Length: 145
Image (cartoon, rainbow, N blue to C red; front, side, top):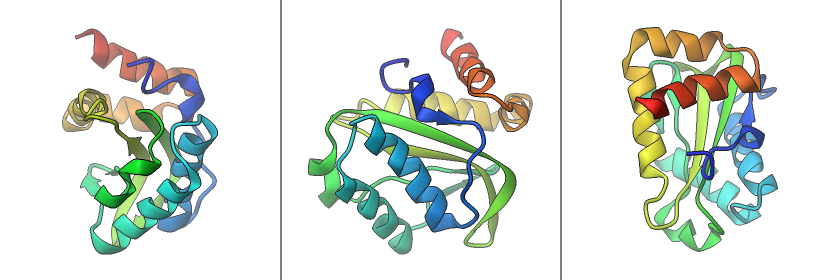
């Protein structure tokens, strides 16, 4: 988990106010970590225009198109938390998880994130976490189970 989602890929107080800006914010974390090239962030926006990545429970998981897999340098997951909800095609989103996966390496952490958001108590902890460390601890607790 720490190799794919490290603390530097977590932003506890996102600044975006729109869906597209939130996708860019999550994508730029992946870019800054050297996990993707800039064309992958564009592919994340393109994917969202054709298919919503809203998952329910204030969660969206934007990712690139199948054609953009060549823009992935290594598997990584970014997470941005927003205090105020972002309008995501008529749904409220407060957690944006950007993913880039090589050979499906990202699927295990996505499974753990799905576990968090399917448990209302764990989802509440994630939404109430205000620091990078608190968010990482919520994810680590699920990883230990």
